[in-house]
Each structure stands twice: as structure tokens, then as C-alpha cells.
Length: 167
Image (cartoon, rainbow, N blue to C red):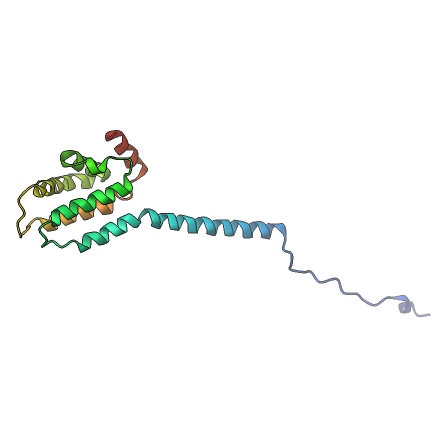
């Protein structure tokens, strides 16, 4: 009698399958998809909030300084973009000192003083007889561009402060 005769053949174990994955992998996949979705939503909102700013900057480039009413067009551009970002404010009825103060209050304090001086000159120019040459036009454009770039979109602090100031 051979003792090896009663042995059975070697059986290989069952293959370990890759599917379905363990619960941890499912959780990781869901978290990654949720993260990607939140990132996409944040990017869309970021671009949407800044769309009026981009449009205002491109409209600013299209205003021709040799036009008689170019100063008025700059003021109208500021009104339109301010109405887009400050809908609760009574922007269409603002003019003169109140309009200048409102715009300066949305800027950081380091930029507000220079803007106020230049914008006050621009406001006076609106009510002067139109002439063909406007020597200060580039200064006005620079101040409008500064306001659009640095005041928009308004921070939450500026937004609540301006609501309290102009309520």
C-alpha cells in the first residue's frame, strides 16, 4: 500500500475578483465625484459673477475719446456696471457728490482718494460745453478702469457698508 495513493489532487483557490470593489472604494469614488461637481459649480459661479466686470472692461475699450460725449459714455458705463453689482442701491438717481462718494466707498482706501479727485473732475466735465478736444480723457478712462478692476465684484464687507451708508 502506497500512502500517497489516498491523496486528492491539489485544488487552486477561487480567483479573487476585482468587482465589486470594497465599500471604501465606493465612498472614495462618490467623494471625488462630489468634489469635481462642487469645483465645476464654483468655477461657473465665479465666471458668472465677474461677467459684468469683463463686459464693462471691454465696453471701456470701445469708447472713443474723440467723441464729444465720451465723458458721458464713461459715466453711463459706470452706472450700468454699478447697477449690476449693487441692485439694492438707488444707483440711477445718484449724481454729483453722492455718486462720487458711493463709487469711492466701494474702492480700497488706497485707491479711493485718487479716484475721487479724478472722478470729480469728470463729473464737472459732464456739465461743461462740449469741445472737440478732451485733454483729461485718458485720466478719466484710467479712473474708470481703476474702479471697475478694484471695486468689482464687491466684497461682503464693502457691500454691507455701502448698504448702511446709502440706505
